[in-house]
Length: 236
Image (cartoon, rainbow, N blue to C red):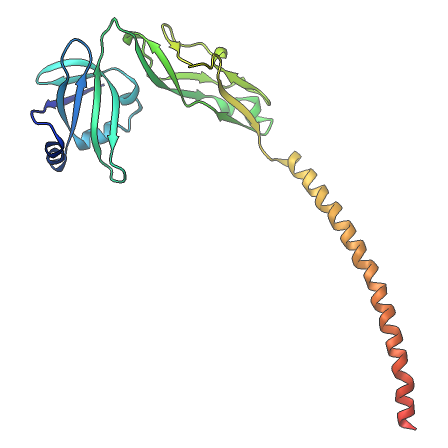
């Protein structure tokens, strides 16, 4: 991926604010053998570029004043509620120096697995990106993981997949973290026990209702009989 930036002469809060008001975004390029360089980019073009995954995880060609250099996106500052990029940082890339960054994980073919097709399960993605170390030439845009072999109750760990050539995972105290887990969802099997429990709770309630009915009838009968003599004496 290639993009064009422009040299920026002025710096400071006021200068950056005026730059943003003209539809530009201030930025900086650092690292490598050169000195930090102030740059500016067209905001609209930058906003659309940031929506692309490759802009975040690949080495790009940045052209400034007719010169092209290899850079990586390192930091983006966004406005708290506006769709506006406040500042952006890039790092120059040295072909002989290892990089340390995060790349996205792409999980594929989960819908073809036995867990999803036949066992009423869903595949839960525990990690969406992986922290890696590698030379610039070995940097992958993403790491693809095939989930076609997942079954009910399985978990997929980092050691279960093959990383691209020259790439080392940086796990920070977790030597073999979980990447994916299979979770069973509520289906027919989960619904049947609930239905049985509801039926079991309804049965005692029905029996209690039937038991109350004779009691009401018994109370009503004597009351009717008691009123009958009183009515005859009144006629006499």
